[in-house]
Image (cartoon, rainbow over all chains, first blue to last red; front, side, top):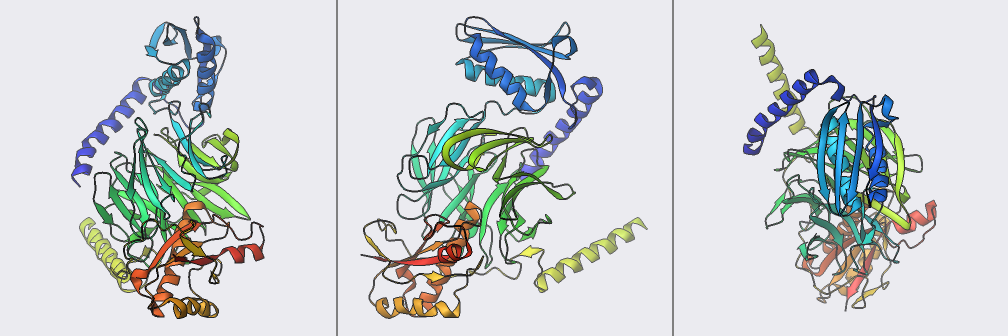
Length: 382
Length: 166
C-alpha cells in the first residue's frame, strides 16, 4: 500500500506531463497507426560504417518511424563516429531536438543513440539496448544463451551440461535467474552477469522453477512444490519466502504488474490452464477472462495495459494479446512464450527454430535469432 | 438517490462475493479454503540425481496419465503397489520423476509434471511408504520415451517414473 501511495502522485505527474506535451507539440504525438517520418543521413567519420548500419536497423525495428528522404521528413537523424565516440544528432528543420555523445563500441553507442531518439520523439522507452536470454540445445544439452535484441553478439552463458531452462532477466539486465537441474532436482539459480557469480537461491525439496523478477529486481515470483503441490511463491533475493496460492491445482508462469502489486499466472484448476490474477501479497486468484480454452505463460506489458500469452489452437501454439482494460484477446502470431519489451510495443517469442521480434501494432514479425538449433523460452531486459 | 444506488451496488457486490466464497465459483481459484493440499516434502537426499549413476531407474513400470490429467487412475494402482510392496519399511528413498507429452508449453509442462509426480507420491504414502522417503522432480516434456508426434507416443510420454536412490 505504501508503495502504491508513493507512486500515485508520480503517476499523476506523468499523465499530466503527457497531456501537456500532446497539447504543446502535436507533431510528437504518435498514434498507434501512424509512424513519424524520419530521415537518416548516415553516420560519418572513420568508424561510421558499422554504427550507421546499426542505427539504420534499429530505427527500422523500433516501429515508431517511417524512414523517408530528407525532404519529406519531420526529423533528420545524423552523426559521426570517431575516436570511440559517436556524436549523434536529431534535428527538426533548424531546431536541434537531440545532440549527445556516446562512447563505447560502435554497436553499443548506436543502440544507445537510437533508444534516446525513441524516448525523445515518442516518450517511450526503446528496445535497442535490450538483451535477449533464451534456451538453446546447440551443445546437445539445453543451456542458457544471451544475445543483443537484434540477434548479434550471441553467446552461451551456462555450461551446466545438464538441463538449464526458463531464463529470466532482471529489468536492468544485471542478473539472470533460471531453472537448473545440475544438482539432480529443479532449482532456481541467480547469476550476477557482471561478475559471473552464481547462487543456488531456491532449492526446496520438490521442483522449484519459473522465476520472474519483480519490477524493482529484488523479488522473484516462482513455482515451488515443497508443501506437496505446485504453488506460487515470492522469494526475496536477500532471503524470505512468501506463499501466494493455496489450491489443489498446478500453478505456473507468474508475471508482475508494473507497480508490483499484482501477479497474473496460469492455473489448471478447471481442468485446462487458464489465467488468474492475484495480489502479490497472496489471497485468492481471480480468473482473467480471455475467451480461449488453454492459456499459459502470460507476460504483463511494462505500461500495464496489455497481456501477451500462449493459447493452443489446432495442433500448435499461438501468441495472443489482450487489452487489460477491456476488449477480447486476439491471436497475433504462431509461436510460443511471448514476452513484452521495454516499449510495451514489441514482444519476443519462439517459433521453435527462431526467436522472433513482433511489432504488435503493425503485426510485422522478424526472426532475430535462428540457425542455432532449437531456441525456446526467450525473455529480454526492460 | 446517488447514494442509494451506490449502497445497493455495494450490497449486491457483497452478496455476490459471499456467494463466491460459499459455493465453488469458477471466477476464483482456491477460494474454498486455506489448506495444504498435499503431504509436505521431507529434506532432499542431496547428491541423488534422478538421471545420475546413484539412482536406479527402470526397475519399476512408470505410472501413465490421461491427457492434461494428474490423477493416478485405478488401473495404474498396481504399479504403485509394486513399489510399496518391495520398498515400504526398508528406509530406501524413492525419487518420483514427472513427465508430460509435448503438447503443452514449457513451464506449464514442468508444473503439470510435478503435479503428476506428487500424485504418485501421495499414492505411495497411502500404501505405506514414509513421506520423508519419497522425493519428486519434474522434467516437463523433456526426455520423451517416444519422440514421435502421435497419440500413442504422447500416451507413453505422460508418465511418472520411479528411481531408487542407491
